[in-house]
Image (cartoon, rainbow, N blue to C red):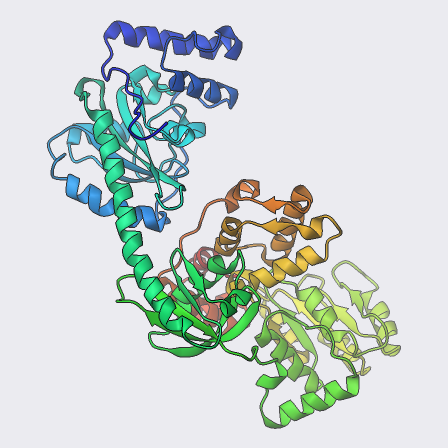
Length: 595
């Protein structure tokens, strides 16, 4: 149905009509879907279809607590286009008991203007406020959720609402569709009480929706013209070039080698947080990995955008980052070892720390939060340095761990002593005895919250290398996902991810770190079986785009991360260094996805 073909039954209902509709709805609820033939219910067809959907999905028909989430991650195009339109209309509706309501594509109310106190009270009693979920599967037939399902304008009058909580309202809603992509980005509605209904509500709602869409076109035209001008100037260069803003990536022919469906979801948040105020060489995450590039802000500053020119050489290897004698010793060791070993860790900084420790003959203790890959990193660090595959022992679970470890070490095999923070913990003397055998030894530990005795033992015998959380290493996410997929058998290894899925993965804070990512990737690949994973295939908590951190929040996140690194993961010392309480630090760590 086109926008001009508005579903427009009479706006008002008589008291007899209201009673008949209420009785019809309750009869269908009580009797079930088969109690009345389709089309015989006596309400508009889109209302009946919605009622039947709600019954089939067991949507509550009585007042209930609605899901709430702060509306701080609104679709940028919707936010930019709708804001000025609704602000301009505020004065026109100042003395009218009608509320203007904007929702996102999921049915969550992201903006509500209800200047008239009586209407505001009615909306509040119905939980029709910013942040509440008014999707059809949450509260049933209504002028937001049903609009989004039908993708056309609808009018929902009083008892036509599925949930009794909304019976005193009439709502005229219209979808907001991005004109140049056809993507549904939200809805706009006018809502009032039954006694305040205006016969032109549906027409007015549709007209305001068209105004919002028109602003999308104008705003996109201005923004895209600026991007194209910047792209054309870059395209004259001989090398690869990209231009990126909040919604778009443009690439020249050579730049296409660095693109992929995951690129925007990865590159834009990274640049938005880390890009310099002037042209600067810096590493950036591209679809083919972390690369050095010349990054330059473009535009007038009102809307952030950047040009990115990948440089011809790949990022330096970890050994190249070593200085002077350390680098030459690394080259000598590598030549003596023969073919290059597999990378110890995906993060060059971690790789560099482990390599330096190995060059100096130091024992390493791999630390970090749960799921960051401590055991696999320790095993890779020891492979090739001893005889055969390293042995893994865990003192907390193996009473005879020391005998097993000493036996392996005496044969020259590498030994990983796992989870040394868990009681009963190994003694300093036991660890030193293993190290004195000359065999390669590594420890793993979670030092966050560990007592001073454990910290003292670890620091006395080993050099600590803390692994970053996945939230701190988002730039490596595509490479990690591709590696995990490649390890799976056919057909799972051929699974592809839609661009919107990459956006959700990059936006999630991954509290379970690499272990959580691996579980997610394996589960998605098994279900997709070489197909394409779409947003609806994701676990529920990953389907929502998380809000990007602003500059102040980014600075605060960096300060917390640096304090944790300086304290070797000890949260008490990190909190003390930051001048905040331990509980506050825990909250900040959860908020920023640290550890």
